[in-house]
Image (cartoon, rainbow, N blue to C red; front, side, top):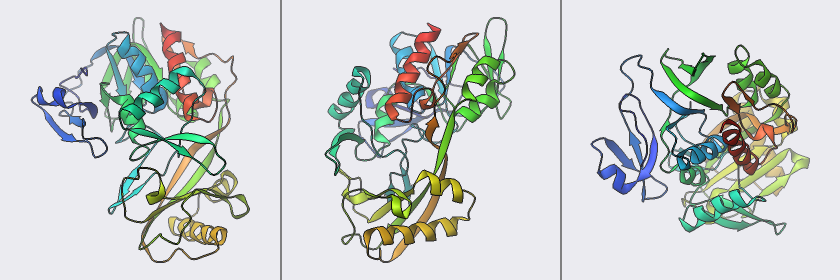
Length: 358
């Protein structure tokens, strides 16, 4: 059962039986009807709950660490600034259209992450997908967000809450959010992107900030298009470096797609994204539509909905060194930027951070 503090707002994915036994609000997940999203009233005071472990970030690294803490019976809480778990493993709903606008698939080399993917598949929240190059990958089903939702089951997670500072005390660590409300813990794992980790840790954890400062990212500009029709568009991913397209996909053509409304996600490559990351939304949308049409050799037709998203920390181009310090004064750091650019790298890093503290 999830550990829930009555004094904080939480978005937690838990089983149906748990929700029915608690006198609090909940709603069914739109992804898997056996999972529920639970909400608890927001904090009403500056009370400082104390935990064995606080994890900053509910992306794949944070969820991996949280699962280990839960298995070890620790009192753990994950804090995330977003509305959804998963970080860059993300799905957006707009005007009835569904877009997988972040990481597009996962694959595994390690047994631990492979076990997670197989368990998610057994639960109906992941499936295999064979790409054009015969590579077999795994995607969340019916959308990518299902994979981190599966990992988050039974974990207590406070969402829409941003940590502004982390302070080392004699016998604990204090995390203060942007509303001035503090949480304390014996130990902390920070899984924020490297530049944000540097800002949070520079004062009290300088060695860890130095580790994070060595990582570098490439951005990714993404356009999400709701269409009147997509029957004439390619049904497999489009990669066209000659037209600056890193990935483009008709959402209805993904295995076990969550919708039948025609939707198209187009992601620019790293170089073009870096050059145009400060362009206006209209300019980014217009240019990527034109580039995609050149890549496929036809027009996309009537666009009913258009939105762009800027992933500033999309892909790790320079990870921190493998032998870098990841733990200092009961605080550890984690993220794909400590190992590479893959979803699995984030997962392994989260496990490694937990083990470094225990």
